[in-house]
Image 1 (tube, rainbow, N blue to C red):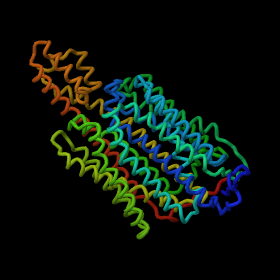
Image 2 (image 1 turned 45 degrees about the vertical axis):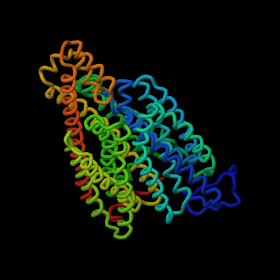
Image 3 (image 1 turned 120 degrees about the vertical axis):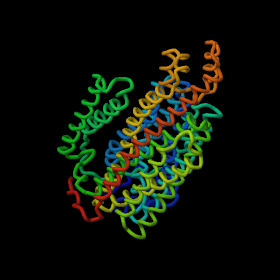
Length: 544
């Protein structure tokens, strides 16, 4: 696809069109690239900064049964926005959506920071997620607009660096702000941080693609939204708010699956589909999509549940629990860089993919064995193994996909990897969140002594099952200790016995949850066995 620079571009005299990108002078290229990188950093930070603040958020707002929903809402909104905005930007250019995404992201951040209930926070996180999805999509595609094919790999490394930076500093920054200010400011700070990014985004060139027709796939867009959202809600509600056999759960799940089937039919018949089904005929694309889906579950599951283990079981503060994720994220960046260098040298996709997915699975299995007796050093070692494997998968499958499809499908195929990674994280968090709450309740029932159970009223015990804030909030611990003392029992001893039971139950529940994740991730090893080499599978037909 060729690009045109419209008459309203800022410096058309110095610009030359070369193939599918606009060759800009350095004075325009530098601020445009800086804006893209900072916008990507901002969007990536919003995904990782929340994890260490969530225990404090549920302490203030309640809703332990919806522990994962704040992240899930962001992910589902981002996932829906990615393919839709990617397609619309092909028609109308990146700049308008780049600016729109930053503006929506900032608006959602303000609303989230001012939330007073968990329901409000979840809803406003969804708005923030729409902006984040737009930013991520336009940033990834912008690299192809700004640089020739031989240079794009190098600058994709900058995007990986932004993700890595956000992953490293996000959890620690979120914990630090939560401990020293309040959790509200992890969202409100996006406004002053977003203003310079918005100004830099304004310098992005007004590039309008040359297309013969702009047939928008409105039915495809609508059915995509109507498929993803109800399925997510069904998975999140099932067994928590409603029984799996309830009309609400079955109804949402059935409706979502029906819309998914309708989406496939619509895309197969559309002249300009949001997701052309032909691209799945390439075996490498199909395998890569599966692995990215599972790697999304691994990434977001570990980011969400590892801090919960450190804070609730090992007694770490929000700040320190975030810092223990830093080695994993550094390992992700190191694994990605090392994998990219080896791939460039050897070109052996399948061997590197098997090694990376195997390492990722082993790391998740090791993390799932952690309990209250696990040392900090041992826990960090397990996390590093997980990060090395996870990071190694990213460049392998991105390069494999880009080398296995025609040029006109490369942007689509790359955005599909992002989409399925987000969907994998979204569905993974929903399912793992259900596993966590159910296993915690079950394990706590078995861990409580008869003495402690008799001292707790049924309502109080149910409240602790739904929100074990006593593990995170010293004031709640003091209140509970006072309640035991008023009941004429040994307040200190009874409270300690309850805390021991809660620690044991939460550690076991987190381990059970991550074991389920490890089993799912192991399927990526099986998928890699079917990975083709570039050119070994049929290319998707050229469609208009």
